[in-house]
Image (tube, rainbow, N blue to C red; front, top):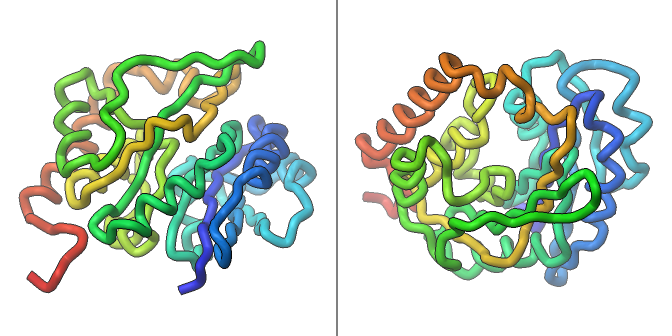
Length: 253
């Protein structure tokens, strides 16, 4: 396996103009000697409105496909991922300096850690940032800790799925992102937490852009009936994984 981190980004036309900012944040990342990143940008659709915003860099691969939502776009990008690790980066977000190196160090140091997350700051339209309380203690995140907190707190996890850094083989084994119109990344996070220990960094690892056109700000995202159905199947998947006692790493037991 190449010593490569695969950055996976789903993008659609309204968010494409943010790609240069995301690219700048990637270029500011410093990795240990021998490690590189490869950015897979997958358009959720086939338009002529995204490609002009894709930076010209040999480390970037841009593809298009029929629309199916961000989870589908990420899965199509994952088909071309050839690195040991996968990092999620939404098109409208940015990685602060040091993020990739911290994520990589956490998983390289402990083979029992399957995934990593980090602290998030909202990136507001005026350029300011805002944090929020409730982060867990930095360090290992034990199995079911995120799932139990999420279930007890109106389906709100204490770590953010948009900061996910994960072992590629584990991501594939769990089937990747869920086939949902939203919360597909939360579904993956809780599935990971059901089977593997994780890691949380208290250093800021994501600037989460708030803007008028983002999908999570639309009325459909908070429709009560749909949200209840999404949360039900997200939890059922995670609980089923725990019930069947599949664990990462599987040491032959």
